Length: 94
Image (cartoon, rainbow, N blue to C red; front, top):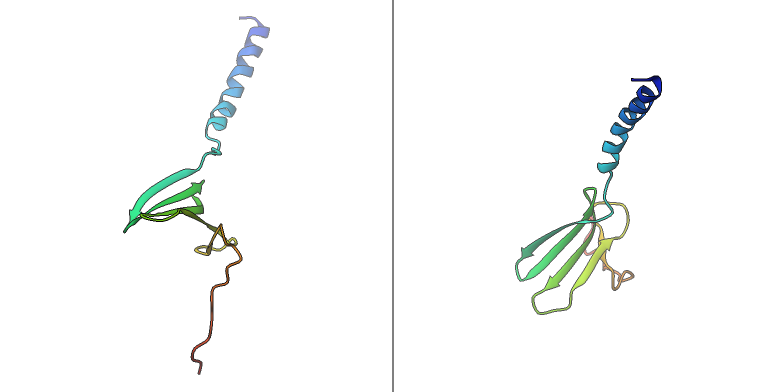
């Protein structure tokens, strides 16, 4: 083998680990988990394990989406009415 062929072989072998890393790159497609919850179907949309949206389809109703209100866990709002105020009245205090 001549020096030029060795150089080409070395270049090819050096790029193999980079090609393997490219195949492990996160995908743009969300992971969708579908489950039945009573009389409704719940679809959870995740990207890289991060839950960002929930689609709820009631048995006899119109489907709606719940999306993250902010970065905190478990704080979702309806996408069709994001400005809907949830009452937070104080009934008793000591």
